[in-house]
Length: 87
Image (cartoon, rainbow, N blue to C red; front, side, top):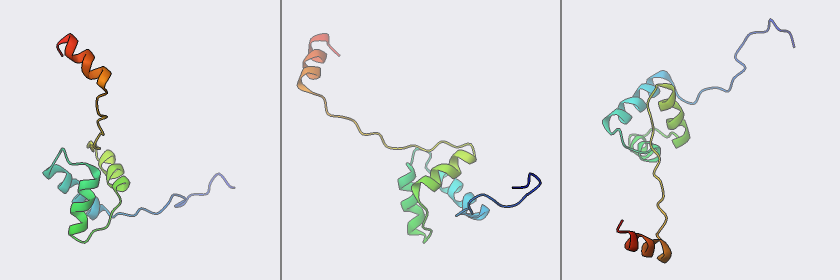
């Protein structure tokens, strides 16, 4: 490989700048929406984009994307400890 070689060695982007702007606009309408919800909203408009792509585009533009966290059910031991401590 020659060190002077320049070119497009990266993978081709799936989204255009116009679509990136659309993703940003939809994300700003509902700031607490998850990437999956944003992907589904865009799918209703006929734009098929993966949730990871949406996450990457929002991070590039300085926005946060939220992912829903699963809450584990409390065990009997934890419930009992909380009851005793008054939490």
